[in-house]
Image (cartoon, rainbow, N blue to C red; front, side, top):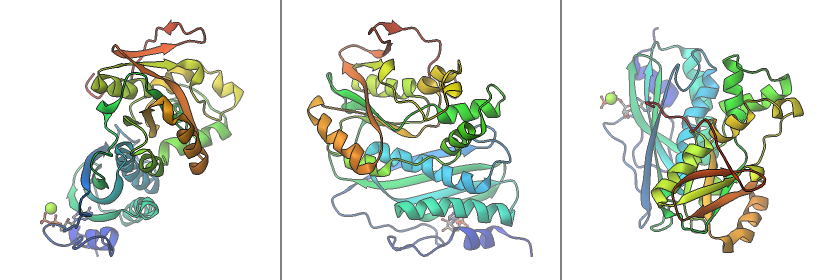
Length: 319
Ligand code: ADP
Ligand code: MG
């Protein structure tokens, strides 16, 4: 029996959802937001051939398309609660659908977030998720909330996902263990939801690093109407071999590579010790990488505090 649209939704995307009044199956879902909380709403689309390689692993893809949306909730300091899934599929392949939904629900369950509806059509492979979360009024981590004198922080490290992409395009050659690490970072990003929640009320501005550190920090600087100074020597490095760390592409991957899904945030210098405690509590590296100052733009400083000229910025679809 061929799988039609409604069998497909029923079989792969319908599960009991405890935090929802009415989930998949009606004209609209009904949700009951916690009284007094604000809803944080965000969407992200992944297009085959643009955001992921054609024929890539379906389970990893299911994980990643939810991960990038959870990362936006993290960057707002919001608790993710519900999402919808709009799927355009070239064909209804049961093995692909089973793997895709397995990957997606594995991450959904980790974060207790419920799939409450969506849309399913035939067409080129495109996955669009809209996510909704909750944040207390005044606690959201807005890009425009940075203040002059703030420390700039980065969770984890950047660069590895972009190195995996460069390897897949044949632009560099990593050994097996470096490639395993970089591919995991590219294909199975860990959205920093717990960090975002802990930073709400502690940090000021935040963004998730999806288009490259320079570009994304640039958004905080622009929206906060300030300049950002980044110290190259303070950047956390990925745990790769000396050979990989010596590749000419490394600096570009660290500063302008995409797909990291770390949080870049600013906070008053007075809360430095609290942020360091948070790093210990979450077992997550948090690095103080620079400062916000009066002015505009992002400046990268070398070991002698001199500005470095760089030939790259971040990713921009229509640039
Ligand atoms: P409508 O005709 O009202 O647009 P649909 O036939 O598109 O409804 O969808 C039927 C139900 O299945 C709706 O509740 C919708 O939210 C849900 N749905 C459709 N596609 C998906 C999907 N990919 N994931 C989760 N729910 C879905
Ligand atoms: Mg529909």
